[in-house]
Length: 574
Image (cartoon, rainbow, N blue to C red; front, side, top):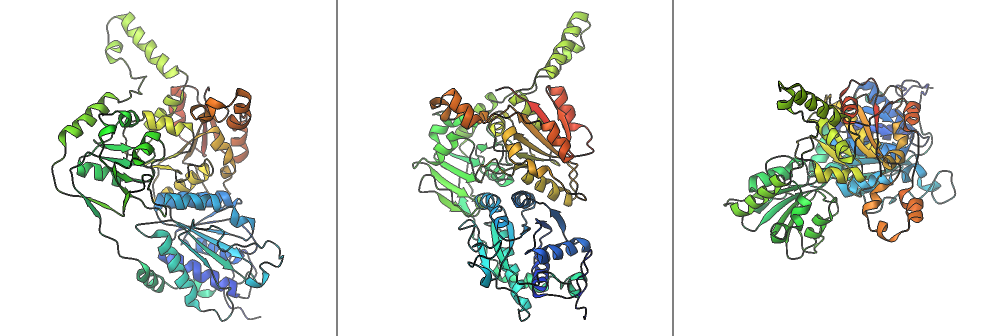
């Protein structure tokens, strides 16, 4: 038999195939356009894509991440897209494998995170006839993708340009500058499903020329920003994924900044401490005439009430496929420019005074320097005892979030789960410029660890040597415990999962259900109490485990040298 290409390492295949040729053309084009991470789950129908990805890793053109659970793979790719704003490609086989990508796809759509879904499928003649592992995959993600293509089944007559054009369409749709999101390419393959890697691919690919040219033709022109001039009493609201843009707008307009802790915009002189109470204050929140919203606010009912007020002018800057329009008359903009004019000094001063008065002092262990330096032995001894008592005090939720916030710096990353702790953090933490992530598009508890690992892997690939911390409750942790499985050859030593363990879903204590449900029903169907052994889970998956019950122990666990990824368990009371 004549050899038509180079077989990938670890195989003895000598013949090429339409499936392999198409897979190589597609992946080569996506890498030429900027894809640097591929996450895959193994399967038979997707083997051509998987083997091509393995050869790209051999060439050093991508970072490859292999996960046995497609749900974990989807969220890991989501985390990579969150950190880099460049889509990672997810590869999976047909059938239920595709369905397991739905949670991450929904989150990507509602959060505006770029994501490429490459799902292998049966060819048209094997659909709807009872063939094994075949279901109706085209359109499976509904309206929650920015582009969905059921590609033609490749054969020996297929045009090379088809896959180049498909890659360009997919990349531009996922990574567009104004709106980003998930894209689904459904890729049917006929047998033979595998084959030799083509020589051109194994030698480094065709180059970026044609894919880039195709993509440039598809990129729409950016619209002009909406100019907002000083005048009406204005505040800037920064929700999840707002980033530094919200702080820039507030700074340029000299407006108060209401920044959720997950926004990545909680820093600078304009940040309002205690913003929930401020919004309830009739002299502050009650006098707001205009709101500029950046990102997706979800943490405070006071913010939702403000954005639902039809008497308030609202301008929303959103990078997702779903508009924000709670009051039915919100104006949407791809970008905002601040016009010339004088700010309302009385308005700004009132917010500044409120913010200063509502700063929360979280440094309960700050030493009494005067006492420690006193020449009076009793005074000095009292100061020493007070300091020791402070660091030995059992941790509560406030001190837990404060400790994590205190230990995290601009070279680190912080991922919040959708748990009670993120709401506590939002209420008490002050301003600090650090990269913050959270899956608040749908605010689900699923995929928290996997998303955090994706963030960590992407940050490390760019040379960032900081720590990625994932702050989660116990139920969100257990929901995604499978993400702790890290294959041999992949590393995540700079990752800490900090678990506030109160034995169940205590977030429901603060919701309406707690007022109407009986104790037995609450315990059975809302709290879902658990007594899982987190130390045993850590050991099973090869993670370090540390229990911290005091501030001193927490500080040590957060800052000490790690030789493996670490789980920090903080027992909490209800």
